[in-house]
Length: 183
Image (tube, rainbow, N blue to C red; front, side, top):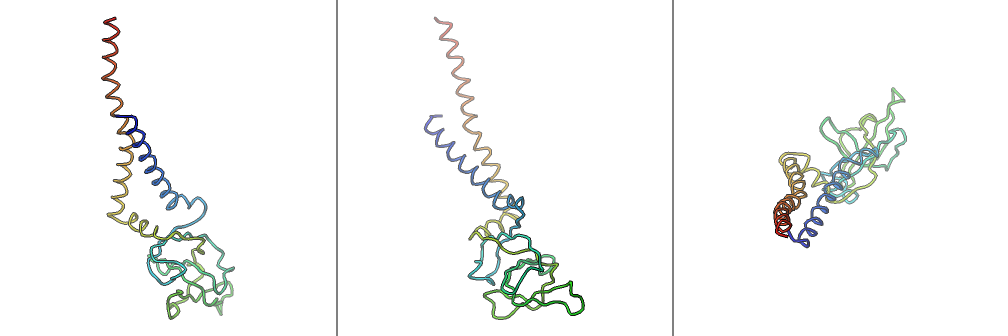
């Protein structure tokens, strides 16, 4: 393998590995910093959070939340939503319980039910446009299978030049020995 081709090959595989590591940090590694990652799947919070964006949510004490704050919360056991608080509603019977009336910025009417404080996951800290599409694709089959296959291919591509170099070195060794024997 020529040295120019090998340098280009190494550069390409290095960039691919960096891209994969960066994606892993953006999708999973941020959990170390206490952030949770969610893909925006609807336009209810346009223009603040665009469809296909990835939002990073930090945990928050629900009793510090106020009207106008944006929260990410569990709608039910399978659905997460991010909407703006339009009213903080204390419980009439138990003052240690608080609920929130919410509404998506792009929605014309408030959400149908109040959000119990225990269902609040946190508040969005920042967002990355379009990365939510990729995250949603990777998290569900067949995207998961494609991601695994791509990772395997990248690892294999990183070792291809070494395989060819070993063959070339093996071919050169006998030639050198013959030249030394002839002298």
